[in-house]
Length: 84
Image 1 (spheres, one colour):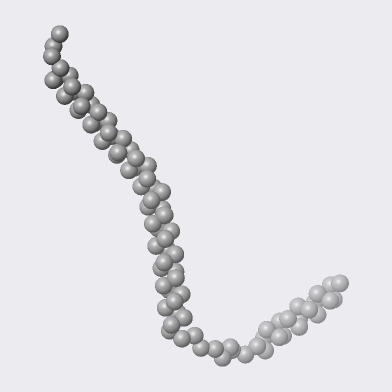
Image 2 (cartoon, rainbow, N blue to C red):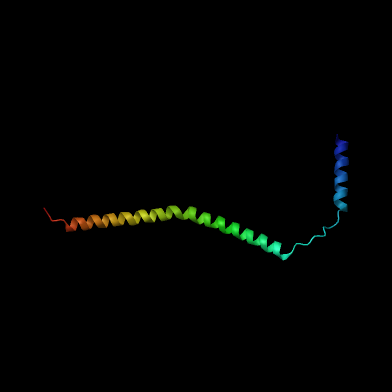
């Protein structure tokens, strides 16, 4: 079993050692497409993070505004009602 592994490893290394360079060309369009897709994914993740963090903050601000309006309405109602 060990001998088979050693033969396999030796043949794998010899094949990998004799492999020549790939004669391939990647044009600028493919590179720009990859960069554009990466930027799009990063912007989507960033927007999702901003909305996840911002939602509770917006809700808190809205509640404070509603509470302030309710207090102001109560004050105005107390001022305008005749004293008994």
